[in-house]
Amino acid sequence: MGYPERKNKILRILDKKESLDVQEIADELGISAVTIRRDLVQLAEEGLLIRTHGGAMKAPARHPFTAFADKETVAASRKKYIGKLAASLVKPGDTIFMDCGSTVFAMCPHLKTISPLRIITNSLPAAAEFMDSPGIQVNLAGGEMDGQRKAIHGDRAIAHIRSYHAAKAFIGTDGLSVKHGLTAFSEKEASISTAMAASADKLFVLCDSSKIGKDSYLKFAPLSALTALITDRELAPSQETQLKGKGVKIIQ
View 1: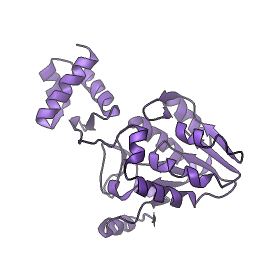
View 2: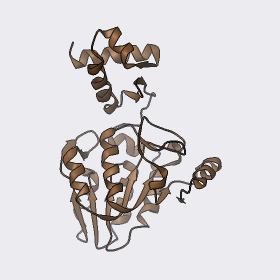
View 3: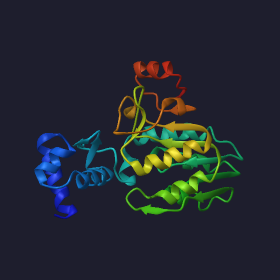
View 4: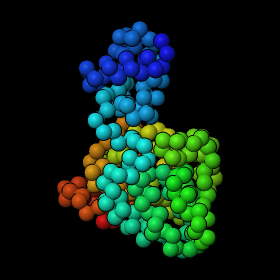
């Protein structure tokens, strides 16, 4: 049984049962648990399910891990607001990291007036945005191109990022909570964000309020790693109080 057939069968099973562990799926399909684990990782990367500890659960109707073009349209006004706030923290002469998130991309129009500026990124749209900006030097990570996300991922991209140092890193997240910190749906994107955070003096997380208080399956950074959370003004007061209680600086 090839991957496409296994994929369809796994998704049909999840449609009926909402969540399953690896062994249940393996027993039902008559396939080794090792193969099922590998398939679940691939299906999670495709945004078709959510990996859990020991298994998987059905993805919501609109899964947060979508193509870059789709992500741009989700909460567009909030993203623009957050992008402008984040860009105001960048100063002439800075070297910054920018990941491939659509909220981080919203910084681009506001960065064009800052010169000189060096940007290290894995985002193809961000790199293209500054093609005609002579005062801005773009360092694009090398590695495997993800056409859907319009980004560069992989071990080579991570090694590339780790070989540089920046004053500030600007990254997105799929979820942020007091209990689990920063979480992601994509291991590829989380690995890039982690590398950027480790190679920067300051870490700024750009996250609209709809993602705060929610978790994905992959934890990639604690709240203590943040220099500040940049979000919109619709953050619930209770969530703001909890985050500040954990020492998180919030820029709204």
